[in-house]
Structure formats: structure tokens, C-alpha cells
Length: 60
Image 1 (cartoon, helix red, strand yellow):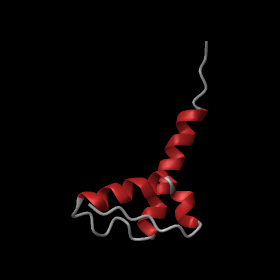
Image 2 (tube, rainbow, N blue to C red):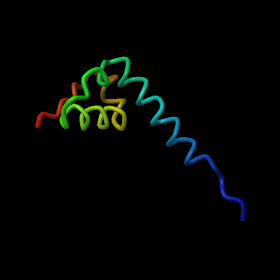
Image 3 (cartoon, rainbow, N blue to C red):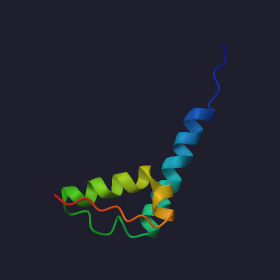
């Protein structure tokens, strides 16, 4: 049976848009600490919140 590629494509598009949003909000500028790396990952995954103005910052 043929399996649709729409779900993986949606995931790839979600992550690419998330990376663009995170980059445009400067979350990739200082990745020198574990907290900054976790914050950047969360912003990529939760990018709609960033567009709504939610500031995500993890400190370690």
C-alpha cells in the first residue's frame, strides 16, 4: 500500500519555519551554554508562540 509523505513533509516545513523564526529573533546568536541551546531548540519547535510574543528563555 502506498503511504503518503504529507506528514513528514509537514514536519520538515514546521522545523524549517521554526529555524527561520528562531534565527530572525536572534536565538542562534549565543549558543555558548546549555540553556541557550535548549532555548533555541524549544523556539524551533514552538515557533508560533514566539510569533505571538512569548519570550522563551531557559537558564541553567
